[in-house]
Length: 324
Image 1 (cartoon, rainbow, N blue to C red):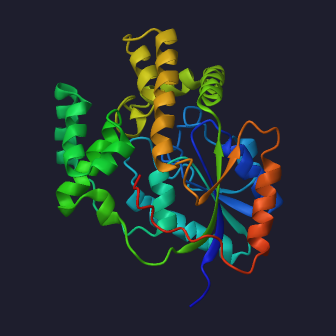
Image 2: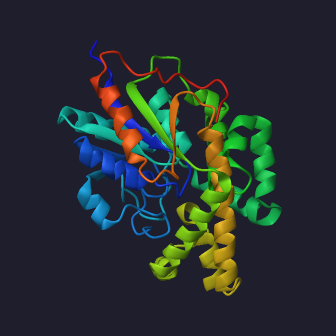
């Protein structure tokens, strides 16, 4: 059997500086970046997803960016074969694959070798579930998921209607809880070094608030208006994410712009808490670096050099028994 492909993963919560670090590492180590952010796969959703800028994409080749229009669902089952193909291609060309993103389900599904059931979207079920969410509230759907799979429900949170519905859809079609059904006990498919960027919560929340302000200055409202004018529904499907929902409410006259911005910041703080359910500070598989360091690139550089120069594989990425 051939040795598993070596790759580096840059993970952590939103706004912590993952993209900048990954681009810098790609330039240093002849690498290419594979996106593991569930929103950056959508074309046209650039400012609001903090997608790598044209300059960053020119500095390092990126994969799995802009692979779907903003009204098509995209799941971990679709992510896995695309990411696996990109990683194999990068490694075959003698370059270093660098996985980068904050969608924990995508990261662990890839690195732990999940066998995700091929569940196709069920439009009728989704429409009925979305109608229920509008009438009964998202919490009703979340409680239903929690009764089936509390680990998955805790990882998603009660506000993410789209992912709650997808988890219920998978359960309905497979008659099994999504997370256990997606795992397998085979050896991990990659030899991976995980580098996590983190910061204390007050500092991270300040970074988030500043980034939302930069997004607004960079044209987030114009982007939301353009998507709406193109017929996409802000607050539905892929555009149900933080920021797009709130700006959609503003454009519909339901919120002032100041309130929409404030709610975007608050919801992003909540997103961080859910992300830390996937990337736990106590997880020994992740080499955590403090994003507050002036140069997190230096310790990351040292970690990668030791990883690439060692003859023995890095710590095995075994499934985390704690879930999420």
